[in-house]
Image (tube, rainbow, N blue to C red; front, top):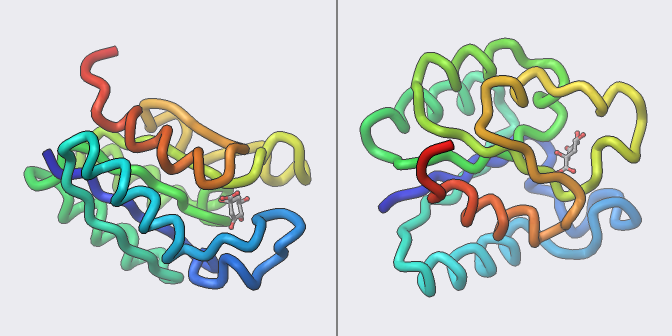
Length: 143
Ligand code: DQA
């Protein structure tokens, strides 16, 4: 089974970026943790990051028929992107929305997600654990 991890804008700067919010863990550290868990679960993962909305849209489209699920931290596009939402619907690949921070404990503009209604569920506020829980959620079958 193959699971695709997609990371959106500014997540390449994790570790340096607002450490009081996101901690000192880098995206590379998160990838290592995800790969460790995936290996234990016997799941293969692909891990990508882009600052470009269209690139994320393309990757979601291309996941169709290849990946069993997507774990998506869309960063700020979570709150703005109808294009990502439409891509998730169009591709039809079950998608789990994840966030490192608890978006509901932050600014009001982060409380709304454009993609949550078309995702299987949302995991927010557990730091690296959000990604690990996201992997577990991505392989859960059915409702
Ligand atoms: C984030 C939360 C978003 O609101 C923010 O724009 C990010 C990171 C998170 O993982 O907590 O870039 O997705």
